Length: 200
Image 1 (tube, helix red, strand yellow):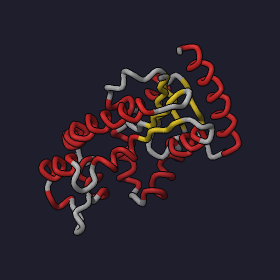
Image 2: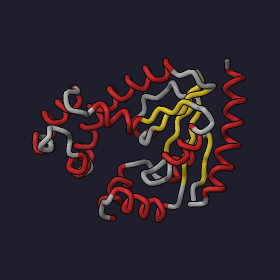
Image 3: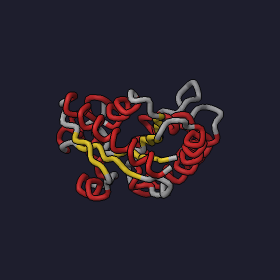
Image 4: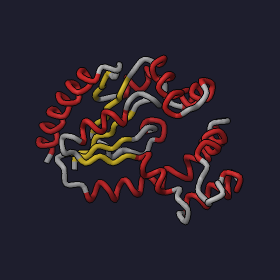
């Protein structure tokens, strides 16, 4: 199976690009969706998180208070690394199971912290969704209802824009022009189909 990882900073438009690729009939596996699943009540990750960070991260119904966890985890690098040590192995395991079940010509993994977390050596190619940092900041504060200060903290915890671009095999520029975005995705999809066919 030819595996392509899609990444980019917070607010870059990864979900939009993933939806456009999925429209071509490609299996999309989203690490954020898996991350939400592994912290549901009754799952081992939730127990580990509350043991590590405290039970005040739970809401009245026993589910995780994501906003409180985000604030705690991004307060310093040590806390963030502790959270990642809990989540990343569980997320990676679910991803491998999903890849094994995929039937499309290639499989797209949406992994926001692809470069930061490491451990994805099985990926054959990487796509970075890129946009100017000011646009990234604006999208994040509007979508996630977080302060500009909190959005900047999250951005600071991720690889810099320049580092991501240098590490990418393919780059999609997402500057809010959906027609341009669709054209870029369509062209890249055709390239990936050819490459995937050549590797089988």
